[in-house]
Length: 215
Image 1 (cartoon, rainbow, N blue to C red):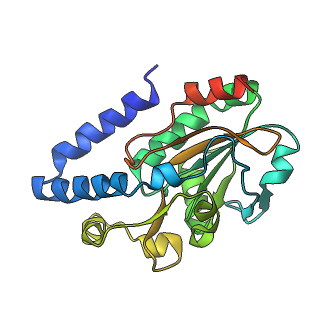
Image 2 (cartoon, rainbow, N blue to C red):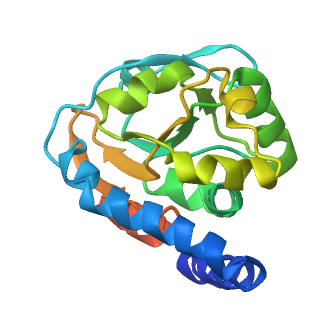
């Protein structure tokens, strides 16, 4: 079975082969600027108390972190949205490893700034059996130190691909979370985390499972 990293690289290689060089230059410059911003280093660190939250799932039911933690460790995965092919690959892979995550003691929830309707579309399209939560205005992602604003230069690029972020997120901010995954122990502290300014890179499920087993 291919690793998540291998599947993401295959997607990225195919995508870059179809994108004009001048557009790639704009995209790469935005990623490099985000890397230089230090946002990853400022995001919630291992050992920190994980901020509690209560967010609606795709059907509108509230999911509360502290209630989940009362039953054991939580894997909290922030993604940009169902419109992002890298996010879709990650979510499909997490779904495929859901039994393994549970066997290691973890309960998985995924969070994006999408509206509940958009989250429902994502959950149905990808046949996800774990909660997909809507973080309006990136309120929770902000508390985890993950929020950035999409570069002005990238907005027409996204629009040209038919990606309407204001419609997907229900606001005009063009804010997104860094792709990030936190393993939170039953004590409410971050035991392990992954965050990257490069949206083509995601936490490997095997590493998440190893972190759960180490608790």
